[in-house]
Length: 179
Ligand SMILES: [Zn+2]
Image 1 (cartoon, rainbow, N blue to C red):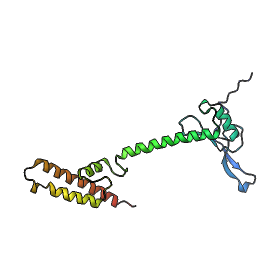
Image 2 (tube, rainbow, N blue to C red):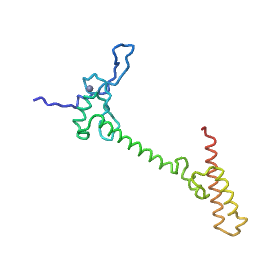
Image 3 (cartoon, helix red, strand yellow):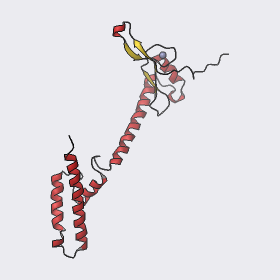
Image 4 (spheres, rainbow, N blue to C red):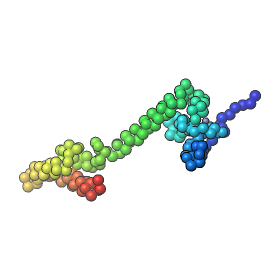
């Protein structure tokens, strides 16, 4: 009895001109099944949660999926959709990681800026005019000239100045950037 092995049946992507007339021929991706010269337009994941795909014709995609328990019972379309959904989840995770790394509410402000906004008692989406107004109000309120001997006020005054400095520099960076 001839033992059937598929391991060496599945070749590397092959591309070739497709079309009856050479002038109209377009290069198309062929089915990855060795010996099959039909267009391979059915993506089939090489492994779960991996972006690598085989590209098969409809018949060979069905054969491939039937032999793989993970997609057992799924049509090529269903298998491809499931794979696409998993890829979407992976993309969403990457976006979330990037969002966290930015460290701010809308992804445009650094952690230092967020702390500075908090120190100036303004909202995270405050524009620079609002930041400037808050700075002037707080600087006047905690100024050493009107809080003589008050260490807490002096500390707060320094914090307000440093915070405004962080936000002013950030504003200047953004203003100097095209767009
Ligand atoms: Zn095929």
